[in-house]
Image (cartoon, rainbow, N blue to C red; front, side, top):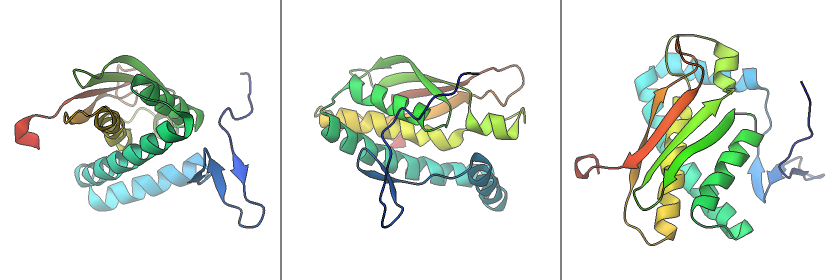
Length: 181
C-alpha cells in the first residue's frame, strides 16, 4: 500500500483549532468514532427512519457544498458533480466513481468502492451506505437549479458491498415523479 498526503487543501486556525477545506469548516474524527455513533442512532431510531432523516439532511448539505464549491472554483455542470465525487473520495468515505451522468435527463449512476462503512461493519447482508443517498440528489439538483432547470431528482442505493455477492455500492439518480414531489 502506498500512502499519500491528503490531496485536498486543509487549513487549521492556530487560535481556534478549526479545520477548513476550500473555506468550509470541517471536522476530523476517527472512522470508528463516526460509524459507532451512526450505528447507535440507527439502533435507536430504526434504519428506515434514520435513512429518511439522513437523506434530507444530506440533500441540503450537498446542495450547499456544491453551491459554495462551484462559486469558489468557478465550476459548473458536470464539473461540479465530478469535483464533489473527488472531494468525497479524498475525505475517506470511499472512492466515488461517476459511471454515468446526464444533466438534461437528470440521471446519474455512482459506484462506491472501498466504503468506510463496509470497512468498519463488514459483510452484514444489507445496504449500509444509505447516508450518502441524499448527497447525490442534492448535488444533482443544485447543479440543475444553477442551470435554470426546474427538474428535481431522487437518489437510491441499489446495492452495497456489505451485501453478500456484491463488491461495490451502486447509487442511481433519476427524475422525481410528480407523485413524489
